[in-house]
Length: 266
Ligand code: PGA
Image 1: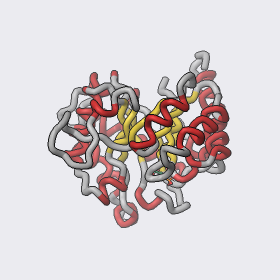
Image 2: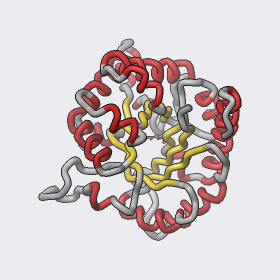
Image 3: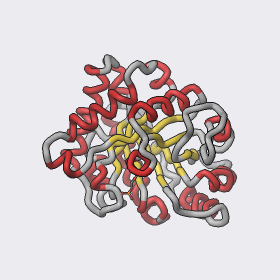
Image 4: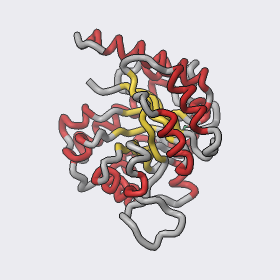
């Protein structure tokens, strides 16, 4: 059974002065069984958020990591620097693909570094609006997956808790979402790309696929009703405790229902 995950991507919001308090409030309001919670603040807020979340089981994630271990990379952050601060990392977010020109090949190197450093990666993939409208969404996402994952050690990725987030670029921060049917079809296409094109076989079924793009407490239920979707990567709404409480509560209901369907305890 795959875990249900609600991951908060705070992007370039919060400061070291206020991030800890917000994280603590969210942790206290989302104590539902069966849901893996992750908060990904800006780098400089990681220590405050880690301290605020000590004693909870909410994980801390970074929003990026450099692929090299150390060296002359001004402004970059290594995996070693994240040790003790974060246990998860978001990789290949569309805002980094767009603003920092991150390629699939580079994202693949970051992924290998994350895994070898014990950081649990969330690999983001997703198509542009023009690509969806021209019927190429699945092809674009499959190419992103092939570019980042070709030649990777499948067992290491699975053991490292590898997660994929499908985030259609046109749905991020726009208030517009993919339909749950389209998101579910993409989640299935993602797993079949892993299984068939990349030769992962049955291991593809073990990879959680999240949906991201204007997720809120009001719409997350539609996505979680799809068996192929295992949670959300949430931007704007993840800064609001009421929204986080609503989303995690909804995910907890799904966790219970899925566990019951498989005859397992939550
Ligand atoms: P959004 O962002 O929820 O604000 O659309 C999601 C993301 O970019 O991860």
